[in-house]
Length: 282
Image (tube, rainbow, N blue to C red; front, side, top):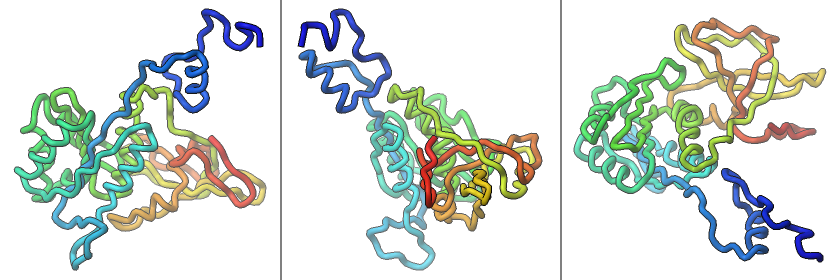
């Protein structure tokens, strides 16, 4: 090959914000470049709270449930370029929560907790956060459904997202609030959730005064139109809602319902949906 026939002198080979994959690594090696400045993968500490939560490796006694959120949130963190650190299950006790959160803040760039933010006597997470540093809690409850009790704090420059214990609510609010912040820290802020247009299979109602997210299943009708059908939310703690859903439809605070046959945008929970005879890509 002639000198400069592949890469010319002064040519830009990689741009800021570009992901370094195997191909980009090969170009760097071809130029003898062994070090480049990159964004680090943010460390995200994950804490599950509640005396009723049990590690899946332990026996399940009456009145207990296995810890779901630590696993779903850990995988969700990896999916958006972060590194999860599972700090385990912490009881709803002031000193233990405070100690665990201090450890998390010293270790990680961001903290995500689940549980302890509703209105029960054991829901003390906001009080604990306000004792850790300044400014403390900056958001206490959001006008959304599901996920109303979500709490956000900033502790000495590090964000803490305290999500509801309900697995569906926790993961949905992760997608809405936490994922964009992980992308920002990781330098992948240009990535947005994949979306597709579909038609509503039947009327969907919103919660008055709250932005409502409705889980939907996608399928083609006989004419080939992509239809979005609501997935029943089920009981509190039911993770199967998210397993069955392909994405969600957002209904604004001022909108009472979405009529059957209306065209809507569906935010996909995964980058592609596989149908029996085709693959729908974002």
